[in-house]
Length: 258
Image 1 (spheres, rainbow, N blue to C red):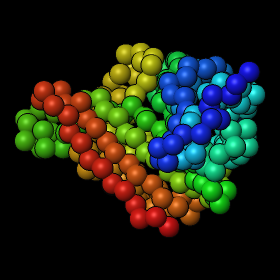
Image 2 (cartoon, rainbow, N blue to C red):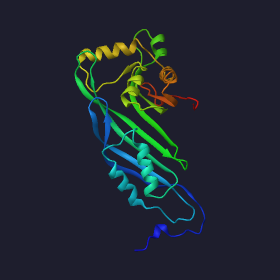
Image 3 (cartoon, rainbow, N blue to C red):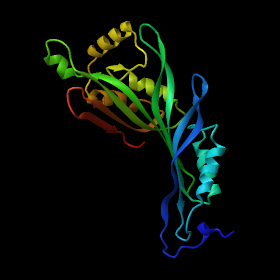
Image 4 (spheres, rainbow, N blue to C red):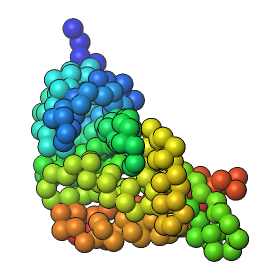
């Protein structure tokens, strides 16, 4: 049969990225406590397309994904990118894998257990020189208490749920659990899926005794990441879904590239 994609294109314009986007696919990821974890990922896969080619072969992206579905992690993204370049005869390749990552978490006092989901993402690129760039991204729910509200009020202070997102480049493999723990320790309080009355009392009082602006949260996270020799670059953002406003509070820090 005629291979239309391999036919020449006379417009002489190369394409930076072409491929498939928004694939929902079951994958297996590494889990520090349980070795592996099954989850559902949303995946984007792209390669470059030379100026002389009419199109890429879309079905080959899915075939590659199916081949690696049981071993998706920061450790083997380079292998997946290399396979994409080889199979699709491309000079550069890109992949983005976003998925919910579940961790069993105990309530602070009662120790009642429940699962918390965190949004994780792995993004990788491989260029013409076979240099691979990897970025790990984690979004973590948090709780904050407003320092200003506490200071000016005779009693009480407004608090709210928020989220912190951090993106990292690194030298050696890192666990999502370590990033999550770092972020949760940088907030007024972390959040839980199961809280008994004694736990709710503890969380409320902990947050009240540890008030933080979004500025405090991003600076605390950034300070920890800055001092970690394994991290070569990072960005961190915090968004508070304000309980007394119809808008969010937001802060962002990006480091210099090492």
